Image (cartoon, rainbow, N blue to C red; front, top):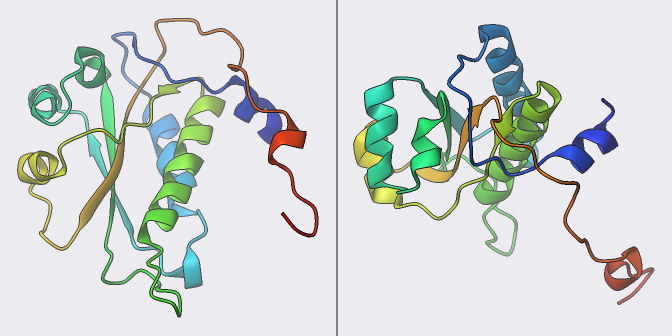
Amino acid sequence: MDVNEVIKVRRSIRKYQIKEIEEDKLFRVLEAGRLSPSAVNKQPWHFIVITDPEIRKRMKEAYSRNWFYEAPVILVICVDPTIAWVRGDGEKFWKVDGSIAMQSMILQATEENLGTCWIGAFHEKTVKKILKIPPHIRVLAMTPLGYPDETKSKVNKRKNMEEILHKNKW
């Protein structure tokens, strides 16, 4: 698929087949995150791949949806704010950097015919405790990863370009 097609067909998947993900596919998903751009090329991210069924089940303590931990893999995107770039006005870019990496992985997963669902509504302290993440590292997002066991319709309604585009000024 080309990039526009991948963006058009990507859906949030909440039901997964009980099927292992091939190592080469998982590697390409992770590689997409690794190769993502970051502010001043700081690359402040870390990726945790959870395949152990017991650890995946424990993740229910942080995000209680059954479909989340029933996927064969959970990806956890972490960022080290202490090495991320900070703009002159103090704006910290660690969330932007981690989000770019997450989006790259989600799009690559779609290309690999794998499903994902960006999760942000989790208990960060619980995730850090379960996964033994150092105190200075932030958990930005998580996604289940696996073969979809549901079919989703085409893209939900999106705003027209005229509603969001401004040329030269607001």
